[in-house]
Image (tube, rainbow over all chains, first blue to last red; front, side):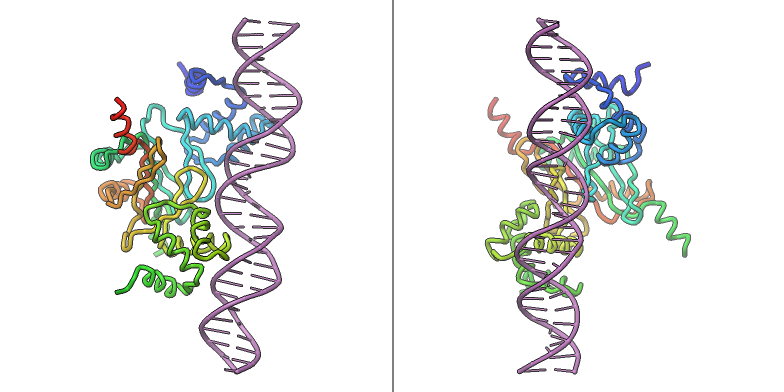
Length: 151
Length: 151
DNA sequence: ATTTCCAATGATAGTTTTTTTCAAGAAAGT
DNA sequence: ACTTTCTTGAAAAAAACTATCATTGGAAAT
């Protein structure tokens, strides 16, 4: 059975790049933290455990490359750092996010809830949608539950 | 009749701030460029025409203040700069954006198309939505038309 | 009126994040 | 083996933003 990393390797190759040990370590970190939303610095520190000799610039370059190939998506939640998020394999669009304004947690919504909205936008604004970014800011179920308990 | 700037002045006052000449010049620039999505640097350069002695730090501080009071919204289209966008008066949510990947134009959608989606999210994820960010990336009507002409 | 106070400012230094440069190293092609 | 190209690490540089601090200017107190 072909693993995820093998398929990424093929994607790189078909775009004319190779999967160097540094790139492999970086991808491995991203795979191991699929649920998280790591900054370049975060990734760098985690990769260093696997490959201590890696440089920060290489991590930035790798993340940029993976973004270009649409293997990861670069997002910004407004805190001054770019974060990198693996795309679901085969997903045609980027998933959505729920950012809690109380605890800072970021949850993901994998379902694509925007089909109807996109149909309206494409028609009414004559805009051909290639991708989207949707983030909700509010209070997550955990903080919400906690507040209710306190009452 | 009360003008927009008067209402903003009141908002500042009721939060314990005053509308200094520098703040007024900054707000004026934002009002004159409502359609645009200016960076702090952009605002700074435009404000300098009205008030040449203003400092960049003051512009940053004013934009931060206006963001806090929800008079403007701070957005990030992924190009490494924060941009500032006046909120429609009385709008409960931030409007949406169409970013063209060909020409870079940014158009606005003032209608709130997300009511249904938000109802689903609040119910299914038990998340209390306070605000949202929605941006579509794709090809705008102008670039689209241009391509058709060429054929 | 004077004085006192304090928010607000401009200039500048400092941070933080990201990008560029450049020399060296590894890999692939010939 | 030799050349070419890609990739890398280290360090410098750039870009965006924030903090510091002395000064100012206007409101409030006396």
